[in-house]
Image (cartoon, rainbow, N blue to C red; front, side):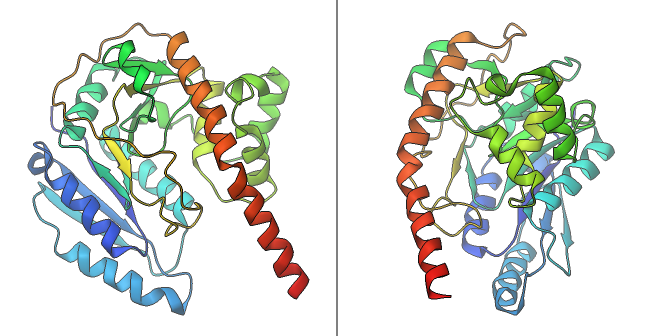
Length: 305
């Protein structure tokens, strides 16, 4: 079967994008894969030069079966860009691999993603494949792959059959989670504030897509397939992104592997869940100072105003 199409979402970071595309080109399946680049428009005049530089990078892209580019005249924002692009390509091809402009992939990334997409194509419980794996050395004890309720949004893939369950309305998702009394479980047993993030989106205080996709999956009892060693590294946690402060918490060493046994029992791995739960808790503890710092800065700005 032909490799799944690849969607790359870019905005105003030409150097990040150039590195991301170079890493993707190094994959053995790149010459057989169709690449779709979604270039978001500027938020204002100050963003125009960087967006134009991004589009210059895009014009030089080679090494794929075909390259299609969609340039937005106005800014959609990352959330709407991803929702639109994933919907379009999953409707057209039945499956899609999703990357952002700050993600470096391992040489085996496309092989793993396509192998998993094909193997689980007709397994309703598996709704996503993740290329990123959190820096948890003990995860190698689980074998090549494992399944978890918690999806990751850095280098992932899905099928039309799964994405059709995506729900835009965070109010409705919150209502369903409350009725099911599953808030604690949704928050990875209280270790990560996903429910609060969903409330922030419902209150128009945060523009995110990932927590809505997670909630949509969770309510369907969907699972995400992970490799036990990461095939994706995020180079955007350097303060250049829209939503993230600088941090090294999520830094990983990319897997050198080129083959995997992706077969696993179709159920959430208890050991995998415990590892993710522990990592979620520890990462929240480490990130707390940055949250405090943002609050202090906000108070200072208000005082000056």
